[in-house]
Image 1 (cartoon, rainbow, N blue to C red):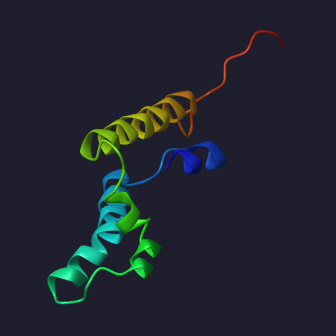
Image 2: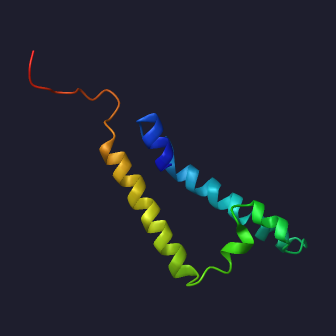
Image 3: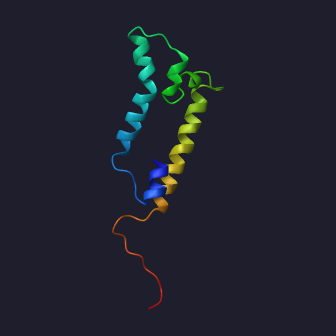
Length: 92
């Protein structure tokens, strides 16, 4: 979402939907596992799913990554002018 804000110079629409869809993509191997498909290394295709299980610090690491990503997104959003905002400059 941060890349979108920086490149398009406007906030994303429905940011909660982006978060939910991203989480569903990352959890897709868990759904497959629940219905009988064993975890395999090809499941790393889904946002490095298996590798993410073995990150040092586990949930604390993911929480720190989340907070950094959120801070980056909010910083980019605050620095992006609102659509229709007027630019006031001195001079002619």
